[in-house]
Figure 1 (cartoon, rainbow, N blue to C red):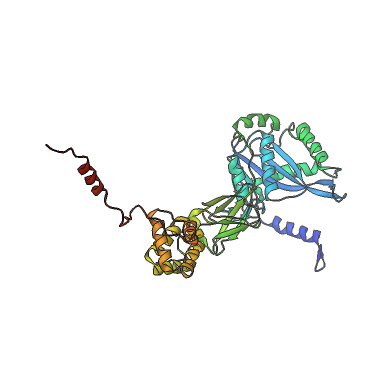
Figure 2 (cartoon, rainbow, N blue to C red):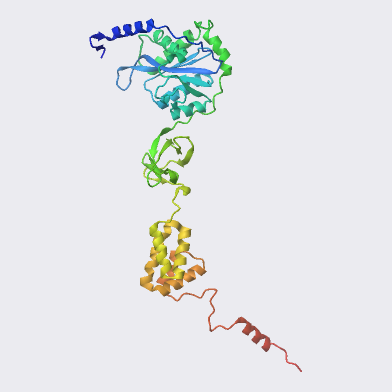
Length: 404
């Protein structure tokens, strides 16, 4: 509403200007930056452009990056804005400039700053990582203090009042081409009002001081926060990924793309786990995240096996140590043989399996199903077979030559 309590909006604005004019203005320091040191960024209102989906004209957003030393600006148009689009516009600006600045000054819009704080603002993780990829850091202005980035504010106003005022375009590409032509033909060749020098000449001095561009563009990801469930996993797009056991019930930060999922400490940013992406409904669990405790049901099963017989208990324990969770049902199968074949028979076969180091459920089952007497082990001696020493003595006695 532009009317409130009988006053028109413009009247209120004029009254506020009078109140501000009555106060003595605060002095402002002149900010001088070295070549390649600082760039200022901001959004503004762009021209009216026809949306191909709706067929109607829409006002697009105007992104502007202005270098602090030369006042060289890069102006880009976009229908929408998001964290990724905001970061991608920075990348495009760096590549148009042929290098990156060391510090990016911005206001506290949500795409860049999650929680404003003049001393320690909370930056958007994706935006922070994109700037780090190019060797830059973000410097957020004080809330309500746009003068810190006055150079880009002037750059936004210059474009709105000069080439884009009253313009309409049939496509975003047409609008961007028109803006680029104006930038090259007029904005770069003008004599800047403060520096009293041509913008293009000053940019030629500043460009060698810009940071070199990385070989590859930034790999974008999505991010968010998740609570670690009781099973030790977090859910990302209907797939499940393990976190360290101590994080159960706590919140962790998540970064993911088409290839990887990364779990981070929300306070320190420390990498907790890194997983390959899984299909919907699948789990990805690191071995160190699996519980080291034996479930109570498994402990009870091992106790039953040990109580049934010494060799049965030892066989089941060895099978569980080697096969883990897969051995639980196999131990149940061994115990089910007690009623069918008797304790003594199962105990005897388990002893043979231990002797032969065959910790295999199938080995025990085959011997029991064939209903055959178990073969002698290497440690057993049949009473009908005499000691080999007796045969040796007999042979020596029979082959001895007779004495005269």
